[in-house]
Image (tube, rainbow, N blue to C red; front, side, top):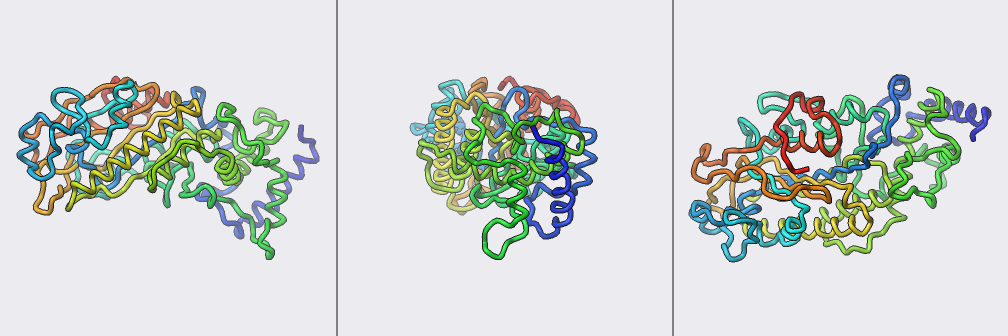
Length: 442
């Protein structure tokens, strides 16, 4: 147990070093709030562990650019599909059939296996009213869960963080990439983003020797950081918990200090986990594989994260789509297969739910360049150890179109709402602003 003198030392350290030297520190993106703003939050919030009581984890995978849904979940039995796409239609005998009407792209054998094992739900014809065909605007709509005629500042996951995770560790939301997705935008800065855990590190003012500065050494000693003692995946301990203490033992000021320390030491914890856990499951090459590999390592290492976010780009296939889309499907399939195998080996597959989305689908007819242009509705994949498998929603008609585009049958916010209600155990109406019909996918 820390003594009064030790706590006083920590107070003085935070007052003199953290506040006085804050201007010279390079802070992670999540420390946008001041020390005093954190104090206000700490005074009224009870901290929560990021994984919550049930320990469930959500992984959101964006298929950026506008994925061609018709060549992903293929209506192979529909003559209109073949007529509209004389060069791009996939041969019937290669389709991985789901039923007598639709099947999966032949490159998605791993997803077909997950479907047969009872771990994949396919939601067909997903979109929203008054669809927008701009990459930027439609992505914004999907990430904020707003109506097409309304601009929303905060992301749907950011609103979840604000309403349900006040006082949680900053690593409650982790995005793999160069910048924070708008889905994470929140009133209270929450979440972190990085491309490589080895490069994500907090540093105090630099020393001339290239080693840790005195402030950083002192900071780490006060926090008791030891990368050899990273918590196991089932531990649920908060980042950088002081030995011999718990949050319930701390005063408001001590909680405030812990909040700031948690934020600063997140980078150390991420680095320690990245070094400690190495998967024996072979992942394919590519950025998507690297991203999901990192997520698997963070899960295995016990990072108390509720939501992970990754992106797979290249789906804007205006020309030469056949080979490009086939390659993208292969990358998606092989990476998800490796990720699932990794989670199963860890014993964490039952805890994880992965959903895919794209800002829009493609038009029904192919264009003159062997590609497809911006469309509307497209399918979503929902997979995990506790998913209820099957086809959900009606596949859009290929003849009753909206100016050449598919008419959506399922609002994407029904998927979000179901995930919030049934996976994150959060009333979806609080986050989405109203109740959407739920889906029997969980």
